[in-house]
Amino acid sequence: MDITAISSGSKGNAYLISDGETTLLLDAGVTFKRIQEAAGYNTGKIAAALVTHRHGDHTAAIPQMTKRGMKVYAPQDTADKFPGVEPLESRDTMTIGTFTATPFDVPHDVPCFGWLVDSAHTGERLVYVTDAEYVRYRFSGMTHLMLEANYSREKLMERARAGELPVKLAERIMQTHMSIDTALGFIRANDISGSEKHKTKRNCRC
Image (cartoon, rainbow, N blue to C red; front, side):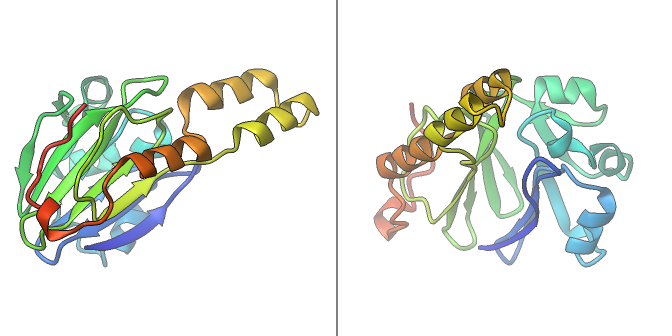
């Protein structure tokens, strides 16, 4: 699977993924121009955008995308905010070209999805999680994992105690985003071997 990182972080999140047959956009938190550039000015090849939640650093390009008739899938409240977005419920599975995509709920301060994406063309399985305190699901046969973990709890509290960071901000980060320790626990608890015996297992489970 080919993964192109357009942008990551609070200034915007967007990634292109392709299995050689179908191209998807994961999140759309940058300008549409940047997405065009990443797609070689051929946005028609993007079969759909899979959006995690409504915050601007994940949705900035949506108005221009829907205006151009591009398919965008997201949680219901994101669809309510952006006309033309198709709402999904957690664990609604759909087929997009050679990909099968399944959103799953993750805890954040607004309704938020992670995405499980399987390729029928290559047999690869990708799990994408960003802006989540933790993941309650377990996955088998992952070949690719895109997981945001942006702080150490100890270091964050040290900065708050030293006055380098507002305490309320530190508390919000810990309640809405994943720590490095939590990310490591998630990795240990899941199968990331990508072995052939696991590639046929297509469902996430609680």
